[in-house]
Image (cartoon, rainbow, N blue to C red):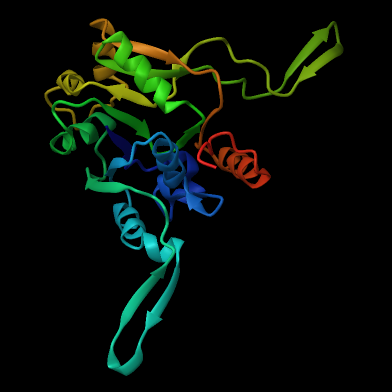
Length: 261
């Protein structure tokens, strides 16, 4: 089963970082968030990736072109007028990575349409965003998708409230909750599983269309979109505050998404 990752947006809400690099290349613990997402899927045996690039796409190409050099001990040989490279203990990733430049300003539906030729017409596939981390059980998600038999599965999450909540009696603060529950609504957490015919729900001209717009609405109206409810960890990296939070979790050694460790 292949995994498609949206990695082409401008990431304007994280402009302090994305002025210089695409958002999926912003690092957590010394590795791009894209690497963390791929490691999650790989932990469940999914190693065939299609990355939809756009903004500063060459940096993603360069990262994978030099992946062994970046992640291994390397000896460079220059003796006797000959050159060579010896990679010591190469990384264990058993990945196949296809990178498709889907355009600078293409929206997510258009990016998905542009990689359809790299997908197996007879096999379901996963789809996610290149800026969100979770401890979602990918195996359970895929099994859920196959069991219900519908065209598409979206992972639904309930984010916590962004700000601390005060319980006030008159003017007296009775309690303070640092991370209160949200409003109870389920939202799109990414981590989709799709049948090949999900591509038939893309509009005729998908370039300017968001996957989260017409396609998902059409799937839901047709009764072909099912939610896999995930109550564990989920965090999008939209701001510097989000990045700092993810970095703190990683450095503490308790990052919930690192199921491969």
